[in-house]
Length: 85
Image (tube, rainbow, N blue to C red; front, side, top):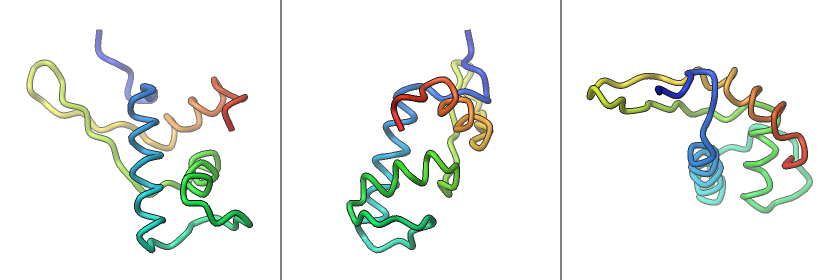
């Protein structure tokens, strides 16, 4: 089974949040208004508001790469996991 392009795995979510936290902690512009200055919390707010400026490419078993529809995937994740954010 190939994972749908409009869904994220829990590993991709962790990678997105971790990478964005690192970017923010190293001085990347923050894309949301947040009172909190902790990078991980800012990344979670950006994720919830669907403004994370990243792309995900998955390597398929055939060796090809597939791009994830990140906006739809984040919307689906937040809808399916409302207690996390």
